[in-house]
Image: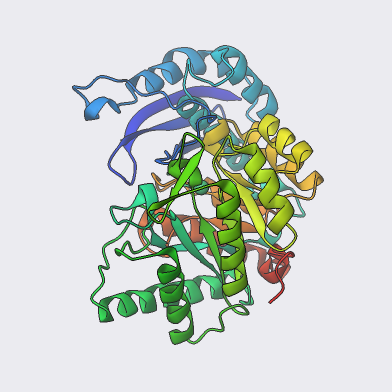
Length: 424
Ligand code: PGA
Ligand code: ZN
């Protein structure tokens, strides 16, 4: 039974304030969850409550969200069973009372929702991945390591936000992590050797100035091969274009020139023909449904087309995508929707319609590792948590190492099965 709910303002990986919630149960269990924060956020995301007081943290303080947890959410939850996750989450929705969680803030709500789940798991003597996923939770995800950063996450002039490598050919998660780290270090020396910057973007990938997106893919391909791996077999590639950021008044500005959705679709088709690209996230903007439908028809049979800003982990937006045949996979970010129950609903809906899912961090992260447990619990098979470097990123990957070890012989690495549309 929930006895007390506490909260505080802490810092995220970008040095901005975020919310941490602590839930105490009457059996002495204490659990804590911290909330991440995006930079290239979707317009349809649940609202992150910020103080707007320019005298503190440039207006980004979260004292109002913290006060909401202490004064309103806590009193509402005291006495409720922590294992009643759906009851708890419904209470949070009712108490907030807005469709976009803007009154109490999705940050206050998510912190509470996740801390309650962690407390219930601890109190039941189960690890979080087993508590949420049940006895069949055993699939370790393919990590998509974001090793080259552009867009809103870097100060270079590369428009694609994330260039990722996915070690599908590894035999285990542990091996995938090693391959990723080796390629990351090799990429660093490739960049250095060419006099390019090895400064980092927000998610820990390198952020050199490059002339084109193809140049980024070529440098990564070179690093994969120099590190001793076969591109297209051992390691494949993924992108997050975050195209909402490139879209204005019906036109995309891409590599310096205006492009229509059809022209971009043609460009992606060329990339897919030239590189082993298995997944393209947000190839088009969040409200460009017609563009998405066209692209899905053109490339959806061979490539994972992942909706991030398009779906914002919202079951209603996902329903619309399913019925229109826009995209074929869902990016899952717990703070886009704001409760664990709604996140699990979005994942179930995706899986029941043959959509793949990828669990995701945000560009502003903390040491919280909940998403590592959730990706195993949901058998999603794919996770992106940034580069295999920097503690707020590797915290998630390190937690997956622990989970794999706990599962022992029962663990199965998703590997190639994570990307059934891809044929080398
Ligand atoms: P964000 O970026 O956390 O800044 O929104 C991540 C993404 O677009 O996937
Ligand atoms: Zn994205």
